[in-house]
Image 1 (tube, helix red, strand yellow):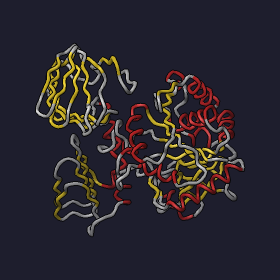
Image 2 (cartoon, rainbow, N blue to C red; image 1 turned 60 degrees about the vertical axis):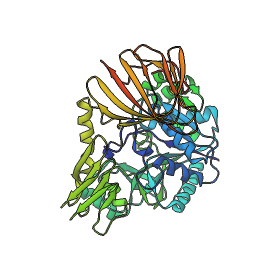
Image 3 (spheres, helix red, strand yellow; image 1 turned 120 degrees about the horizontal axis):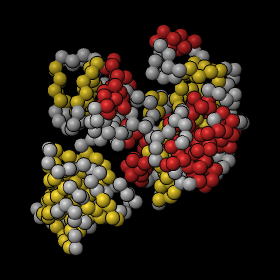
Image 4 (cartoon, rainbow, N blue to C red; image 1 turned 90 degrees about the vertical axis):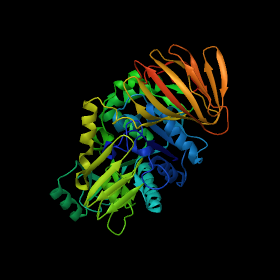
Length: 468
């Protein structure tokens, strides 16, 4: 059987706030090294033998960033991007990928399911574990990868090993005393969330244990639509799908579960503490990034993004600075960062969702200043890219070119603007910004109006198929 990689690239990584946001999640961030976690996952897949072009399942709002990062690697001339219009956990994502492969690709492959946001340092051991897992799958097992635990951990689920490669049971996240017993026994693994599934058997077992997931996702695939490289699951059908994990709906219920021992240098980098533990430290146990000055600091994580961070007398503390938020907490409380994200959501603030810099398929914009009736942005448009032909009801816009060349559609007129030239667009006027040049276009945009929200956009034409 061939191996069909399925990369699960949804999720937001709320415990890594303020760096990870809903619209810029941890799998797309360079946390360690020069590649994102998604990119390093794809590079590991590329080194495996007998693999088909990968399927990447991603939230619709992350589709362009994901595509850009895959294309930057330049190692996959062919791949498949499946878009989730609504999040429905891992069971729906995996089932949808299996049904898509059955309908459009190889319906007899082994699905190698890998989360996009994990770190694996022992790549040769990973390849050996995949080879063993695929063999078990070919013999009729739903195979999971059990991580050899390095220490008692209360943040992970555990797998109890039975006779041979069989799974005796799956265990929820334990308390510390129970985790210590698990590790001491040598009979338990951390649950990695990685799997090798025979495609046909996976769907048959899902139909037996939770037929509603297969029914809704089968309809979602049948009614799905293609948009260039993207395949979008049908929203209405997917919204009816149960919101459950593959462990809950299948692996805990099936009698065909097997486990492969995987000592592969694995971490899900699920918190700032996990990142501190994994990262290279200075002589005082500190992990530093960005413009940081310290005096008498030990065993701390300090990450400066946009400005100087100065620290004095800290012990076992994490400080994470971004353009619009600063997190300060004991390293031991890293798991509680998600509680701050929950409070931001309840208060209707947007810091849980976006950074000041927001990435678009044509480039990016950074909010420099925001007040009640005006805001200032720095806009970067990639070479040969253009924004949609659009109109705003409530705001006027002033554009000043800082570098590069801009082609501007302003009502019935089309003009070229060079560095230090500007134009003014009134509310209600159809307009478009393009970069006809070979270098990035940078300009300053000043918006003035009674309402400045990003939803005040009416699109008439868009190269990227966006409507909203």
